[in-house]
Length: 123
Picture 1: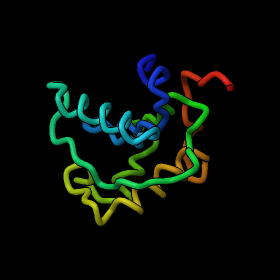
Picture 2: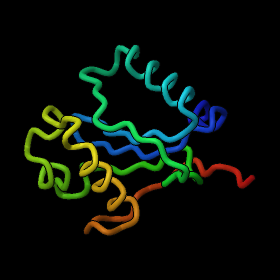
Picture 3: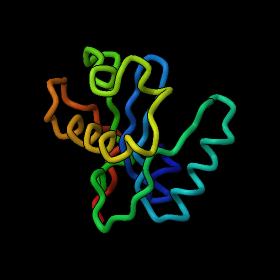
Picture 4: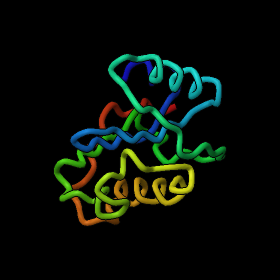
């Protein structure tokens, strides 16, 4: 996470027993460099992009990476997107997936609060 802070990367990481879903925020070249690194990492497989979006406002600007453990939420991802969600998500699901992650992060889903770690220093 320290590298994220140095690069000004912020975002949200959702973990489910067999998958990670990540929203990455930052300057385009920094996000692209991080994503390329993730794709090269042999610990990751089936890495896919489901949404690329430009915005003037970060949803997680104060956190290097907010985290949600989907193993403790009763299977909300699977309830929302189906049992094989991580394998079947496509660009058509991008906006809905982003809304799902944002709802989890602000507590608009019936789950325990997201664990937000590595708070960014206020500028």
